[in-house]
Image 1: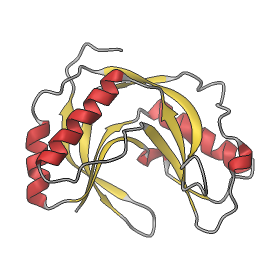
Image 2: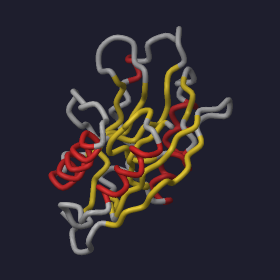
Image 3: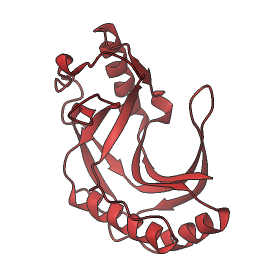
Length: 189
């Protein structure tokens, strides 16, 4: 099964992301398959294909107390990935956060311990808004770094995370929660 670990995004943030998607589409950015706002999440570790037994071992490992208490993250800017060449995705990046990096590193080590290959790229937190269709014109001229004023600097609280199974289908991916984990209360960094 296709598995990843992610934190939920609150409804007020998802609503704002939906407004961003609509505004960008109205500006002519139509060569994207937009991610349904209800399915936008903060991926902490993509694990890929995993056997059910390995997924259960990952769930057991992540049941240990996490190395960080609940903490806040801040929305930063819109950007295309990769930053050079033909873009594949439009994302909303998050500001640097030590607690977020520590949580993602801890989850990565747990995933590796159950057989998931090491992630060679550094963790860059973001929310995926849309994926580009192949063969489209490069939209780099749109400079999406302009951020809607009503969302500039918005923050949300990470209080826990989930192991999710992703099933790809004609209508986009569907997700099944395989495990839920809470962070200790008390943080706001």
